[in-house]
Image (cartoon, rainbow, N blue to C red; front, side, top):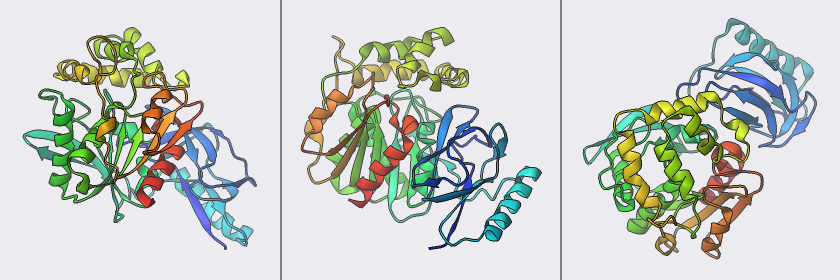
Length: 371
């Protein structure tokens, strides 16, 4: 069936305005499937891989490697069979003109930020999309809503997607109370109430995985499905030295090796990423927040403090994703979910699967949403 798919510069985070194409992985004339790697892109925060939004033939590369392109600008054209060369060239010419003027396309679909008041706590969040199914993304310890920058946009093509900052993180209030799992779960339930979300598909990474499990245990009728990404609280193994080291690191030199443990490819830890995390850690209240949350994750003896495996409701559809090279919460912990969730281990990927293998994570969420 003839179609023309305009491949645009993605928006990976609220602050992203442009991206640099460092390499085209696919070539003009290549047949690609949805999710195939198209190009490597650098942002001011992290490098990532742009995946094909649809299968077809890559008919034009509009923005060449080495150049910058505004978010939303067409950088390539994929087409199905039967599309004439004249039609392709017309679309490509419009895209080249837009790039030459440096004018971004309409910013429709980009995340919109907001603040929700929950029990006296200001929660920052970003929402995008307009689908009937509502998906809520909950990050891990020390992360924030930008942890989802590679997956929020593709999920928003079909669903309404919310990415929130837990208390003590990102742009939310830094007061975390007792820092317990129960208090964090109450915050997420309060977020659903504040946004008027009756039932949501919850997605949690690391600490966020334990939090969404606790929400599902407390109010199963509010949860349509769970997607757990390297979740805490399942299995006995956790790198306590990483968690303590992250909480205590106060300089770039101290922080960088800990951030390196998050990825299978340490090259993803750019200087900008280290500086951004360090800037966050130096905000008023963050040090206290991280230290208050640490006992929720790590027992005094150094093992895992959480065990949420018995809390997982059997009536809630659950999909789990683990990086095979996860150094923080190893994939061996996935045994705790045997027979209770569809588990996918991605080889060559570390703790941040949503950044290193976003297509796999999006597919897992879709599997949880659609059943």
